[in-house]
Image (cartoon, helix red, strand yellow):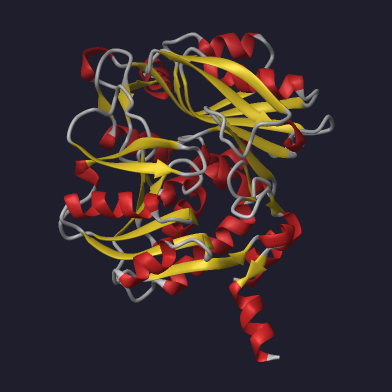
Length: 198
Length: 198
């Protein structure tokens, strides 16, 4: 997605060979116009997949997920990372380890929002080792619902989450795939293809 | 806001005299179409207030805030409740006590996203005792920016946050004001006015 790649090029900050900071438009400050376009793009890529509901994970998944839900005319559920006092019964849960934060979170979704006949589109801001996506998938399976696909804003193509999920048969659509953060530079998969084509 | 009040009447669950559960459209499952209308309503109510940026709090504030940002053509910043490893320097922080969760959270915003000449609209899903709004206001003040107003989706009119904030001179716009949750029933401020008028 050209607009997103341009934004990453202009505003993304490479903190290390594995950490890309995009807090000016995605996960701290949020660019609503860009999120709107991202929602449109997800809607286009999953238009034939019979999506009945979107599942994401708080907090950074919410903006792109809600914009996709707006375009696709479906409700959005966000999994919580901690239980709240008003949300305790009939929870579907999974454990997700975050390498960035070096901690494990139990994520949970109220059972009543995922039905057996639902076709769930999982949306998240980042895909690296796939822990979050797998945790969300586990929750969908507990509900006996179907995973229609996974929509990712930024995939770290140099980590194995994406290939692992695709090998397991999931339709994974990433709007930008970063193949390397070496030498403080963001290299996109698209760039590589272009270079090869030259 | 009629659409929101109708939604609360149809789907809100009164858990006690102080707890209203709206997890089917606002803070667990999210209704994107309703959020879009909420964004439009906030944009209308603050159209003359020179808003340059929206500040909210993860996670339930994000959806209404991003929709308002889309309508008002401004960026949205969400304060975080925990520090992440990639967000550690130059933080503006405040302590917020949640009576619902019975815990205190340090909320934080990266300094670089709030400028002195910014006019900040604070948006949140709920206003009860006003702790979250006051914490966000404290952060805006630390940045020497101006608070243009506060937009609240649901205000618990029987708790003192709203009157406290208004007494302190803030423009507070709540899209639904719940005056009572007594007897398992949601009474809106509007209902009361109508009853008085009869």
